Image (cartoon, rainbow, N blue to C red; front, side):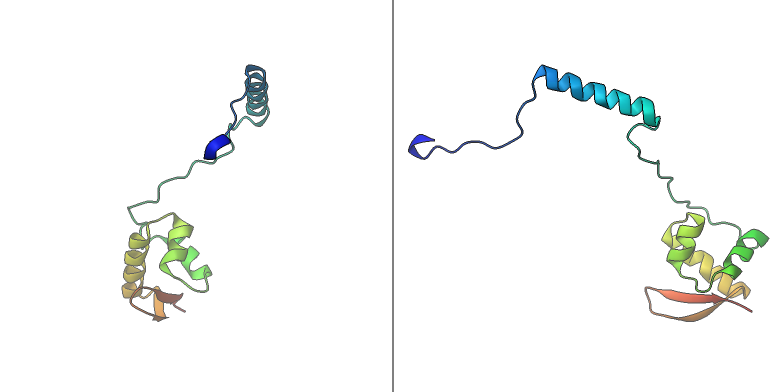
Length: 112
């Protein structure tokens, strides 16, 4: 570092022996775990809403204390826009009642 020269940063290159060891450890992990890297595959949220007339869906909804688009989206693996439409349809049918909310978030409760 003479005359103001700066050293470059970055990761040090591994030797061949070190790379071999790392590869062997990785192979052993894959054999033991069986899953590979341990990531679970995410399923894409559904675009088609579940049938609002289905007894299974209505039964699940009646068990919940408060209903928001987010809770429905996570419970039934839906997109938020689809969950909002489903809540609107359920409110029109009288399955749920509007409690409060704003333009962006609406809170419902199951009808008695």
